[in-house]
Image 1 (cartoon, rainbow, N blue to C red):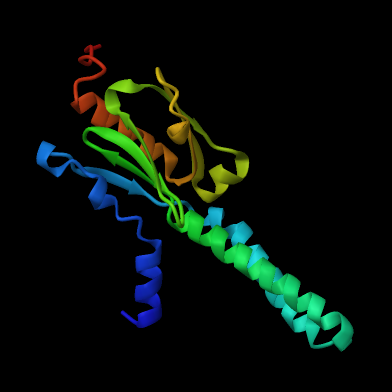
Image 2 (cartoon, rainbow, N blue to C red):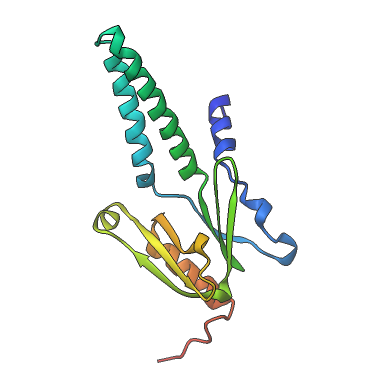
Amino acid sequence: MGFVSGFVARLGDPRISKHLLREEGEVVVDEVVHHWFAYLRPGAEATMALVLLVASWFVSVHVAWFFIIVAAGLMVHAAWGGLAVLRDRFVITNMRVFRVHGVLSQSLATMPLSRILDISVKKPLHGRILGFGHFCFESAAQEQGLRDIRYVGRPDERDLSIQRVVQRAGLRGPRVPN
């Protein structure tokens, strides 16, 4: 692994393992990174910054400085947005679901499986075409950090994964045979 790719991997790694209750037997069932669609806005901003930089070569020197400053601002904003998406992880374990996110400071929101009352999966038209959706968790406590998880790839598979974990934990009651 090269220096740059190693640096980016370390920068984008929110270190999920440090949040696991290993001594209690907690294991990761699924770690959800955002679908590529979530990177479109930062990518568009970076592209616009490059267009402004190239355009600065073809305008008067008196105007070029403005293009360069706006391009630098856009590039910083795009990098920050991309890094925020990269460091935002939703994790399903055999005991709970949690979300870790943040660039400089890190936030952790946790919900035990027993507190999940309902999971809504919303798939807009473009999400159905491209293979992503949004989760909306309903719980008794309404923890806002876990209420909406956006741009989840393969949302139906992930929903079934959560339902299986909840069922195996015995939190929904036994299945009734038909």
